[in-house]
Amino acid sequence: MNQTNVANIPEELQTRISDILFYKWDPLNLSNSNWPKYEYDSYVAEVFRLSYERDDCSELTAYLTKLATEHMACARNEQHDKAVAKLLLSVVNDTDYYPDHAVIEVNNGDDSEVADLDALDMDKLNSIVSLQKSLSLSHEEIERYFAWLEQFPFEVRSDGVSVEFELLPGLGEKVTVRLGGKELVLRDYL
Image 1 (spheres, rainbow, N blue to C red):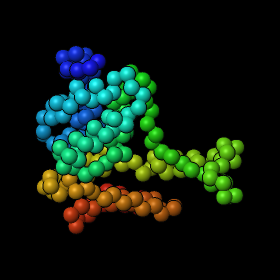
Image 2: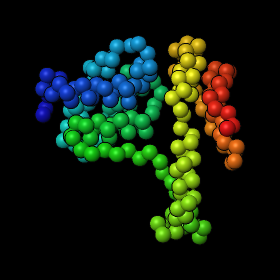
Image 3: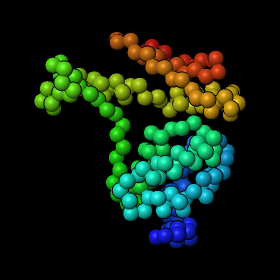
Image 4: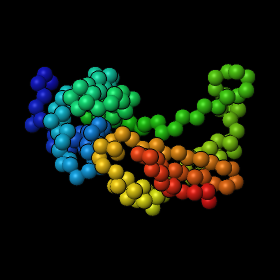
């Protein structure tokens, strides 16, 4: 496939690529606004060309990074671009893709890198998993966050938000969001 034209790409696949570019890649943070969804559609044919029948996502990652940094003047985020490129590769080539959501390293105490599976303390591992679940924000907290975020102009919001999780064993957790010198407590110690 030398010259890729959008007309040669199945419509369903065009839509899927477009959705991933708009909702997952989105270097301009347009998906959280009323901006038209087709903003990145002009890149669909090249994304398809760089993905079709390939195993390696490095060329596609470089393309996404170049678009974001050189054409859109956004901050470089190769790790994010690589994750999106892997997803796009799997969609275009209809392969399974299961991104890593958490990495847990266990030190077995004898200076070796990682303990074997038999040495894992399952109670400790289960408590880590339940802690991760408890730090997830509820629907109500997310709605409160977005309502609070609306007070800031878009330029300020694009600078980023810091979210701080504090855990006090036995008391619960506190979730605080900070932006532009202002602070919102989404959850206070339970």
